[in-house]
Image (cartoon, rainbow over all chains, first blue to last red):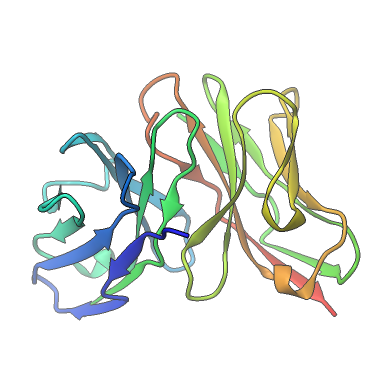
Length: 114
Length: 116
């Protein structure tokens, strides 16, 4: 069964550094998403991406964040200058369509900012 | 704005007994409702969804959920719990009627422990 994959599983970085989190969505899916879960808190929506552009973003997704689909298979989340409060589990998800479709989640990348 | 409430942080049930994990929601339009399960060190796995139609929906691993529009609830149920059902369960909602239509809004999760 096809799965969403994410790399790395754990990333440790220093405050102020740039990080890129990578995701490979399911191959025939058209919509892509990033969510994050700070330890002990809810899973929160960051951004959705369709047809090579951002379709929706939350207040969390400020100018420090960007997303890209560089090669037709990967989907990346870049944090330009990490802060301590960016420490969280980041989940990538994809779906084949929008209206009736569930989103399929990857295993997550745990980002630790020191 | 859409929101989801899972009123119980933890539910304990004996193996073989029926289980219920509660969820209530708030949306401005028609809700699309989902249940996901998270096992330790794993991502969120889709269990079932309600889009339209029959209020009782069946999903993976013997789980089902009942949509109740008047009570704005979508409780997850299983007739006979297994120890392997022990995990973190998340209810989520989407509202296609306006802003926020792409995103899932999650509850805070309910930890289910099935006791042998």
